[in-house]
Image (cartoon, rainbow, N blue to C red; front, side, top):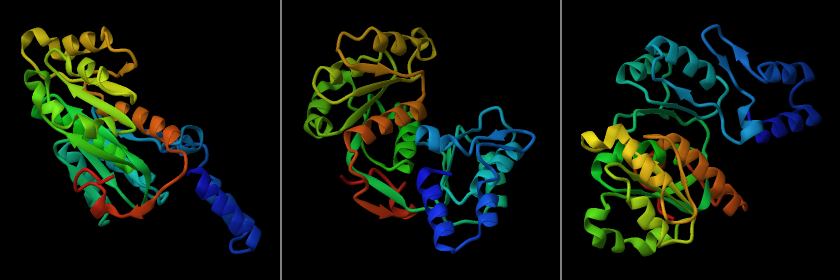
Length: 272
């Protein structure tokens, strides 16, 4: 439940469209709901501006289904990350909705029940290689579900700087930039030295043995000589996207420029 929903609920009570008892029933689940296997934080949107998201790794398909179903019953959009095809199959059995979708590359389950209100401007997601797309896709889907348009710039790593320079002007126009890179992770420093927007570096585990499952990229990004770069954990496209959306809200505080539906939300990078 978010601030807008509560405002609407109070206006309905004031206008006599619903009774006080009905309003109390709707508010009963605040601030959290204990369902035995989890305590769902329905209050998070009010505190943080983002709803709780289901982290599916190490949960059984049945647990994911139960949590997803309870969150879907609020009528809001729902996101689950690190979801297996089996988890999606379990959710799909319980929820028959045209706004339900699964992205096998990002490993995300998305349920869109309310129109997404787009914020002006866009976030750029820049990948060093095609192998970084799973993490980049998780970031893109998260950001788009939370109202930020995304432009994806794929495979522009430091092994061929001319590829990056070919799209750098469009990257510079982004309000926030996510740089997703494995191997040695140098792309974040290069981009950070070319732009005046906030840069969030996302190391990935892409690389050979001495990459140490992403540790080399993480350390390179943490030791970047380019000022103003923020670094998240290895493969944490979700965390990077949430941070980027929070920044985007502060940069573009004047509200949404239009609404759209599921078909226009996750079919690809949204146009600015």
